[in-house]
Amino acid sequence: MTINWLAFLTVFVASVVAACLVVTLFATGIRLLATPPHGARPAGSPRDEEMDDVEGPQRPRRATAGAVALFVVAALVALYGIYLIIPALHP
Amino acid sequence: MTAATAALVVLVIALALVFDFTNGFHDTANAMATPIATGAMRPRVAVAVAAVLNLVGAFLSTTVAQTISGGLIHEGSGGVEIGPAIVFAGLIGAIVWNISTWYFGLPSSSSHALFGGLVGASIVGAGFGAIDYGVLLGKVIIPAVLAPFTAAVVAFLATRLAYAITRRQDGRPDGRRVFRVGQVFSSSLVALAHGTNDAQKTMGVITLTLIAAGLQPAGATPPFWVIAACAAAIAIGTYTGGWRIIRTLGTGLTAVKPAQGFASEVSTAATILASSHLGFALSTTHVASGSVIGSGLGRRGSVVRWATARRIVTGWVFTLPAAAVVGAVAQLLVGVGAIGIIIDTVLGVGFMIVVFLRARPERIDANSLEREVAGAGAAVHRPKKRDRRGATA
Image 1 (cartoon, rainbow over the protein chains, first blue to last red):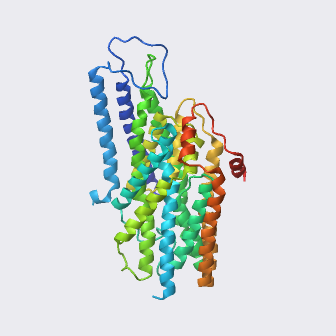
Image 2: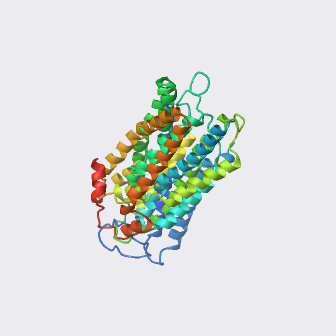
Image 3: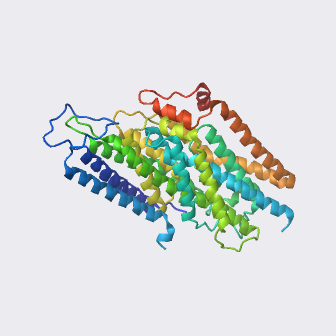
């Protein structure tokens, strides 16, 4: 039996695309949630923390709406994943 | 059907469920090691969620394979008749190996263990010609080599992205703690995918044994009690939580942070789903381990402990042959007759009890893991003296 390299390559590309898509959606949502209030000044040098909470409630409303929209799209992609693993849904 | 055959079928079903249980507790880590490590879910909650999703998953997907070995062994006319006796010996091999790798905290593929056990038993039963080496290479060995690398690359890219997108240039909080919320969902998806994949294997073993014994017509679908029993066994196994393996995957390979954990779980889910739907089957365990390593390489300033990775890979290399040797020995005893089967069963159960007793003094459970996660941060995991000796042995 030969190795189906084309199938492997398809799996590889599909995995990269799907994973990067979901992570981009979710991370961009978090980036929007972390939008500082209007007119806020920079608070120092670039920040790269692991356990930061998002900043308080004065975030622009549009940022919140955008974040929620992105989380919903990410959830839809995950739902598509669930659709894929249930054989009964696609004969 | 004689009373002896009936007894053997009952024994095989019981062993298959024990195997399903070990499959569950071995693989809890694939979904739940990273959310436990970042504190996204408390250990008890995480294993409960994984157990429920495995239970649900088992009911969602009940199509079983046509052959027990997936073409690995020449079955049927001109090949081996894989009857209850060979399945019995194969299961003993798989269970013994799963328990052994659990003791050393090594994530290893339960399907490889099962294939190994069956291969060993078949070789004793019918010689080396019984194995289709092309299938062995193409469906077992090559995918096992490719899976961790694939997952590592995917997780590396996903982790880089997650950090690049959320990095703040103005010094204000970046909100990365929110990734822990995402982790609840991403790890749940992995658990569900596991339930749909793995419970099927045991359903297949039991159904095909019933067919071989003439209790079910050929080509039958699993009866409801088989589905329910397999779903319950894998869920109970998952809930028991292979805490040793969870610790290896969650804290032993690299210190996992929320953004990294999320990226790693999404990569595992994406790779498993892609592989099972585009026709190139990869083992969940190999993918999950690869993802954790890839995400560790992708995060700035994180350290991957290659010594642990080497131990895990060594376990993978030995899984199939070791389970095959145990399966072969078990099959040799089966050849002696009923007394051999009894000796096999007693030795198998005895082995399990001994390993569990040996594991008790250095017990790792939900509480000890929770303390470890709480005390993490700066703390570097250092294995106990006994574990270190195990690592070099």
